[in-house]
Image (cartoon, helix red, strand yellow):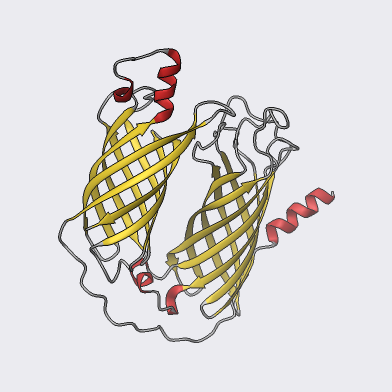
Amino acid sequence: MKHKILILLYIVLNVQLSWGQIGGQLSGHVGYIIPNNRVFPEINGPSHMIRGSVLQHTRNSSLRWARYYNTPILGFNLSYENFGTKDALGQAVSLIPSLSFYLVNKSKFNLRIQSGLGMAYLTHPFDKIRNPENTVNGSHLNFAALTSLVMSFELGAGLFLESGPSLTHYSNGNYAKPNVGSNLPDWSVGVRYVLKKETEDVSTEPLAAYSRRYHPFFRLGVGVTEKSLDGPKYPILEGTIGINRQFGVVNRVNTGFSMLYDDRAYRFQEHLGLNEDKRFRMSTRYVWFLGHEFLFGHVGFLTEGGFYLNKFEGKSSFLSAKLGFNFYINNTLQKTSFLPYLGIYIHSSFGEAEFIELATGWMF
């Protein structure tokens, strides 16, 4: 009975307060982890999550990029989640920046989609001595991604009834095995209270016209991955050249070629005595890619997809993908050339994470 009361409290505890541009949110979620592997720890019950958020409503803010995304809500979300297993998976604490976009925004009803990517600390990762039953997560530190759909109905006087599904995903990007990844769909039901404050939109000077010419760029990156459970870490080195062009103030498209050297594949061949005359060639990948980047001033959200152009050791797919962030010294809405940046990405083959990459680059 006590357990059911706690679940009910988590569900209804979804209250948000907003003062002008700044808001706060506390939400409760109940769901059930997806057993996405044939060898999966025993699930004892539903998952529970409590999330607290600091929000900035960009409608009246001076953030220039917000006008081009229909003034979304910027959030910083701190969450605590119990996976619903007794010992093997434990709990997760995550910090996830997010954006919440309006799909419908009426006076009595709004519908929003929220998406974010951040970091999480998992309390019970795989350990061959202390926790061999965790066949899902292999490290304390993980990436955490969230997606949610929120329906909001105004009951009157700034009081809203809110409900909607969400999905949280945890993965370490194959930095440590196992890395099956945890997927936790859930549902939240609650109320939102908005302390309304009459403010006028902040007017800003028009943005300078964006560059419509093609810009060459280069990028150097390094990643780390494992070959087996509790095995040594091996570097993966990447070099990239390409060109990009803006097709709007906040939209940039790129294409180019990458070369990746996988030391894990080289050491594997060396250990087994394979490909003695062509180990380096069989440990090197060539990729053609096409990508898109959403620009948010000093931050860019990058997605790239492409094809492997050669045969190499350990090839499991001909498809390559990359997802992550670029961090620019200059504001990309004010300066569109000669831009140095740092990047952090998750690299995958046919949707399966391979490694986390740290990179530095320069766009001319």
